[in-house]
Image (cartoon, rainbow, N blue to C red):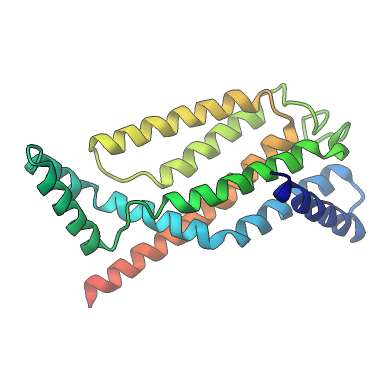
Length: 224
């Protein structure tokens, strides 16, 4: 993990020097901008992975009703079911494993970013809005709640608009993960939770534009 943490730490320090170098002396504002710019740039750099993952998830969601029909029709013939599923994937231009690789690549990057924020000593004693110190948890529970809400909304955007069992399971997982992030955010430093909230907002914006572009492209294909 150090192979990622060290360069990202140097990058964060560079951003910090840039922000303070342009005359922002209020540490609360400076550190907020540090976290925001840091998260924004990394998210932009891994945007191709986000696009690939989002496209795969959206397309898989779109064909869920047809998959359910095939599962019901060929439930007693697994071999035929597998054949028909592969034909459906090919027809829809979907690779069921395409969404896994981007997640696997992004995961260590986000963990490394977590360690960068976690290990930054400058947050100690610096207040942010109602929080006495960015290095301490938010005792008012506001940031943890925002963490859970943004996690839920981000997951909600990716959920297929169907009522099949897989969609219901995904909805339940989204609720569970949102509650889980509220719980762990109460124990994390305000800086870490702030990083997660900012990341969720950026991700939602990216997903919004990617999903709408996919829908627009599908509409154009229908017109043609």
